[in-house]
Length: 205
Image (cartoon, rainbow, N blue to C red; front, side, top):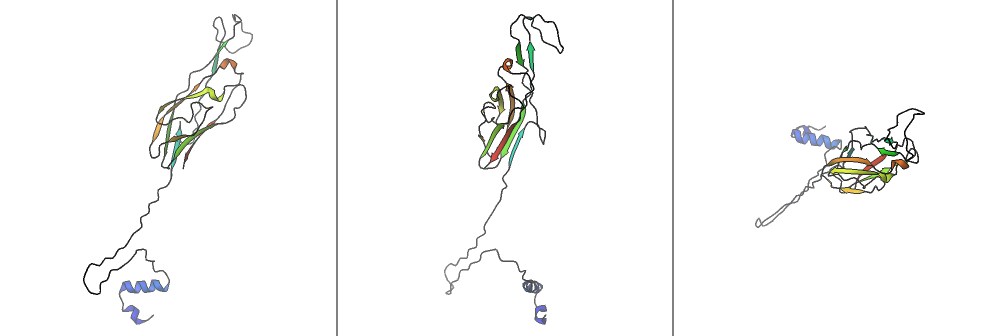
C-alpha cells in the first residue's frame, strides 16, 4: 500500500479501505445544485427524503375467558308431574299421584353472561359465527338459542340459527357481554345430552 494513502486523513483512509473491499455505503439522499455563472439572481437546490411507516395489521377477539379456556354455557331440563305437582327424583317404581296430564319440562335459568371484546386496526373488521353438528338429533334447534347483548360488540345474528357477518369499527375497542338464552319447547325434545360448539371468527381486511 502506498505512502500516499497514509498521508491522507483518517476518514479518507477508511473510505479508501472500504472501497477496496466494495463496502462503501450507497448514497441514499438526493442531491441537486443551482448555478448562476453571472453571480447574480437566485439559485436553488432541492433534495427530497421519502418517509415510510409500516403499521402491522392486528385483530383481537375474546369471548368469555382469556387464553385457551373455552367456556361452556349449560342448561338442565327439569320435569314436573301433575297434578301434585311432583318433581321426580332418581329411582324406579316410585309411586306418584299422576292425574294423566302431560308433564311439564322446563329448562333451567340462563348461565351467566360472558364478557366479550374485539379490536382491530384493519380497514374493515367483521365477526361471524358458525354452529357445528349436534352430538345427537332430537334436541333443541339452533334457533332456540338467542343472545342477549350489552355493550358495544353486537352478536353476529339474533340467534345461533341466524349467524351472519357483522361489521365492527376499526381502531376502537368494542366490549360488552353476551348471555345465551335457551328457548323452544323442552317437552318435545328426546331425552339425552346434547352438545355442540359455536365458533366465532373475527376477520380484518
